[in-house]
Length: 352
Image 1 (cartoon, rainbow, N blue to C red):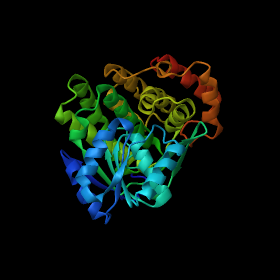
Image 2 (cartoon, helix red, strand yellow; image 1 turned 180 degrees about the horizontal axis):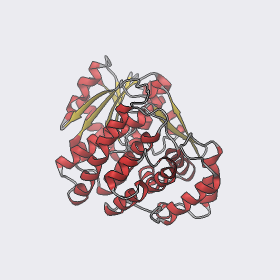
Image 3 (cartoon, helix red, strand yellow; image 1 turned 90 degrees about the vertical axis):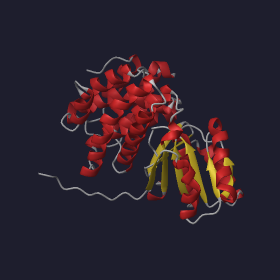
Image 4 (cartoon, rainbow, N blue to C red; image 1 turned 120 degrees about the vertical axis):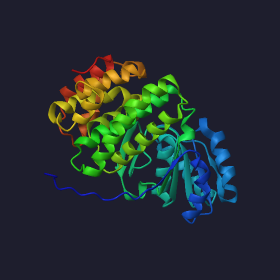
């Protein structure tokens, strides 16, 4: 029997394919805007400037200061640039850092957003914004945060380094994992998760061997869209809480932190909702947690928090922060249990 559910409907327009970057000027015009501020990280400034050139007189300039974990001070600088340029929308080119900055501007100014993801991390389809201030990352949800248009161009991912390919894909899989047991899950999101898991399973080993495999790139980006959509329409739980704590309070890199945590947070909740996590076990083999760990190892993902800059004395404080205001989770969140989980992730052992 199908359980009762509520599905709010997808509201973001999606353009997917090869060479779709060329459609960005039309998408800006379709939204009715004439002054778009193009956003990027410093690393992708040249690409942002090239995109701004294609916008012609619709470009209001480039702000290339996006930073990991969306620091509030960077957002304030970007909002000043947005207003100073008399912009009326933002075009965010890049990964989660740039997407986050676009969202932060939008929620403060009411600007529409066109997002062009260049990794698989998957925040572009969500109404979620995580921001960092005074050493802590806080997260909020608001319909005003969700982008109006997302343009997926497979060609932009052909040069994505193998390391970031793997870690951002595992970040996306984490969205799928938590969607399977979310209290507000629904059949549409579950179907997208079931599409995404085997697509990533098949694409990542191929991309580890040949990063310019166009078919594998297309499959991975499609899976990333499915996972981002899943995250955007269900509640987050323990995995995302821990990732926010380690990123916001300890400065750990976003995608790599998700990748290392994923097998361990999966195993922690598998003890309580193993039946709901069966799609992961069936896709990767064994138990869900161990299957993800072995898959991550096989594609060269980082396995230890110790390798990301966390120190063993940090584990006690991380467990304390994570359990101070925990997200709703299918298994009770205890300080002892989370400290054990973090120790296992710190050491990099396969979860049991």
